[in-house]
Each structure stands twice: as C-alpha cells, then as structure tokens.
Amino acid sequence: MKNRSIIINEWAGAISSQVQIGQTANTAAAANLFQDYMERKAGNTRARYIQALNGFGIFLNTLGYKNQGMTEPTEWGGITFGLIEAYKRAQLQEGYSISTTNQNTYIIKAFAKLAAQAEIIPAEEIIKIQGIKGYKSSEAAHINEQRTQAGNATRIGSKKEHSTVITREQAKALKAQPTDTLQGKRNALLMALLLDHGARISEVISLKGDDIDILNKTVVFHRTKTNRIDKHYLTADSWQAAKVYFDSVKPAPGKSIWIGINKKGDVSGSFGKLAAQKTVKALGREIGIEISCHDCRHYYATAAHRAGSSSLDIMRAGGWASPAMLSRYIEPDQIQNINIRLE
Image 1 (cartoon, rainbow, N blue to C red):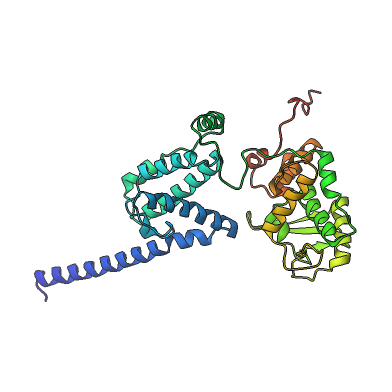
Image 2 (image 1 turned 180 degrees about the vertical axis):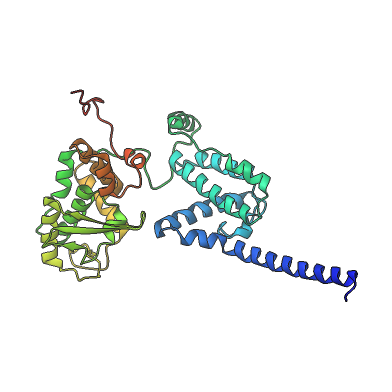
C-alpha cells in the first residue's frame, strides 16, 4: 500500500496537469474569442466593427500604445476606463457626429467585455468601462454649438446629422428618368426600388436576375443586416421601370442585374454600391436637392406612415428590427395631431 506522501505527490501532479490543461484551453479560447464574436455578425456589421476598432487603435497609437488595430484580444492588455473615455471625447473634438461617437463607443465597450472575459482586462476595470455612457440626442444641439464656438464644427462620417426630406413631387421627379438611354433605364429602376420599397442600398445592389419576377410583379430582397429574405410586390412605378430595364439588359439568374455604363453610354464594368451612391447624389442635384440613398429610406417610411400604413407593417416591409428603430425614419408631421382620431 502506498504511503501518504506518495499519494499526495501523485494527487498534486494530477491537479497540476489538470490546471495546465485548463490554462491551455483558456489561452486557446481567448485567441478565438474575437473571431467567434465577429463570425456571428453580418458582413456589413463586421466591416463597421473593424472600422471602429481601427479608429480606436489609431488614437491609442498617438498616445504611444502600440497596436495593429485592436482586433486581437492580446492587444487589449492595459486598456482602461480612462483611455476609452478619452477616445469618446476625442471623437467629438475631431468632428464625429454624436450618433457615430456613440456607436464607436458601444463597439469598443463590447470588445473590452470580451477581453475581460479572457482575463486580459481586470474585472474591476471592466466594471468601470461598462459604466461609460454615450451622449443623449437631446444633448446634440448643445454639443454642436460648443464645437462651433471652439472651431470644431466639421463633422466626419458617412451619415448626415439629419436626413434630407424628399417631397412626393421630388420622388416622382427622381423616378422619372429618361428611358431612351440604357443609363436612364437603369437609374429609373434604381430610384424606384429605393423610394417605393425602402430597401437599403446594399440590398438593392445585391439583386440578381432571378430576384425580380416581371411576370408575377415581385422582388426579393436579401437583408444581410437582419438575416432575412423578404418578398415585395413591385409598385406600378418599380414594375414599369424593371420591365423596361429587363427588356434591354436581360439579366441572367444568379447574376447581378446592374451594369456599369461609361461616359459614352456603352456598357462597361460593374455597378456597385459606391457607384450607386454617387448616382443617387447626382440625380438629386439635378432636381436641386442634396440626397443620399438612405434619405430614400426615410422617404419610404414617412410616405407609408402618412398614407395610413401601420407601424408594424412598415417595419416588416422595410426590414427594420424594431418599432423604435423605425420611428427614427419617419419624419414628424408639421401638425402633430393630424393623425389623431377621437371618434
């Protein structure tokens, strides 16, 4: 029979081996933590997260905290409440909108939490980091006024502080593109899909030849942002625009419906998201307004609301995740009780 000292030594060795196995597993889990988190997100969301992390990394580099973009857990050692709070304030000084600043701060806090889960950021520090608050929309006017006085009024970011309101007459003008050219036919369909269906530009640009059914007058939108596939009946304008365009282009199933057109009017290259955004801006300027693709989405939500569509139906048709998100897209009525019925 083994004596007590031998037994104790064997137990200690076994425990030590188990601890080592556990620590090795923790190290591997920490290395994959960020990757696993990102893989669960849609492509556009991943790109947005990487952009936010890289921005934080650039800020840290200016302070002497060297990193390669803050996309790896090991880069988060030494990150504190003070550094994240300082970056939040620095974004405003650099001209970022309150919305963009809040989004970036939220993303950074989310990854700090992952780093804390991997025991890279101490537990007491993550408690303080999670307590960092974003700016309220009600504070926007005061903050922008102070930035103007301080000479920091220039805003940075792809989204405008406020959407451009598109009237019904302007929407008709935008959809009424000349159909005697291939470019005009393409642009008419582009504007009809954006204005009459409220689709995101990424959803419109990703359309394939079999996503639009001319015979049954339907269109299928692949919403990667919300992981949904939605079918719409084409409106009269969008069906007519699609029919005219498809008669000329004849998109193949599984292939993009969009074609690039050079200055001579000849088919040349592809027509992607950036080109579409530039086209929408140019078409807006032709009728005297500054618009973006996202303004068309605001128009859709507002027009549908004022025509009497329920918020639930608009939310589902437009691919919004919640009524609260939808409410940001509906322009307030000039007469606030216009839709109130007491009898």
